[in-house]
Image (cartoon, rainbow, N blue to C red):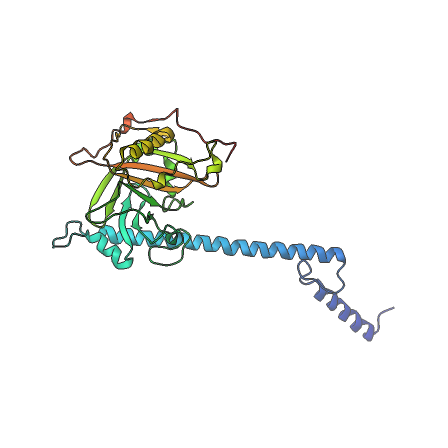
Length: 314
């Protein structure tokens, strides 16, 4: 016996309502859902929100990374395009003039041939500002390479040990490429020198040591760290000797580059990934007047007696 027209209409209406309730069933809480279904949907909604948040964060990280790379590429091109032997009365390097026009806190330009280390260096009023501020003043987690605010670097005076900080970026920008030096003779042999131009002159530095070190006293058995970042003035012979003793105790590599009291030094400092917090430090000595700037990398070898981290404390 067939249904009446009114029954058929009621059936169709009920069927449509059922279909309507099913739409969005996997996510939206609807009238009539059981307690189990409500809990399941709430969990699903939470997962969706987490995925959206992760996508937003990842997207922003990628955007900031690309923005930092593009900025560095632009600055490199601008710096390299300037003729280094510009005539005139100015004592300042022409490349520095270009950088200062963008950022008046420019203090120099650093480069390690064949690597991503190729960008300007600034000096702020403290060692915090440029951790999250790009060279052009925009906010960026990649920050800017900066000279320790306590260092002196002018046309007529400079500290004995210039310390430059930059982030250890995963994409190997900033000081992210320095990690490749770790216990790696081949990378050192290919990149044994650093060029650092102040605003007034260009200098080459020979890398002679690099090491990972603790950042907190609680990470050491002695309860004190090697505060390499506080050795800016090495005019006192005892201070110099203590500094070098700590450096050679820790260095992962022994090189043919000699150092002596009265030399000028460049220290690159970045975060390290062995434990949190830790630092990776690369040290170089300025090429002396009249010295051959080439480095005998064949004489270098990994240091079997390098001081090791106390893994029970970090």
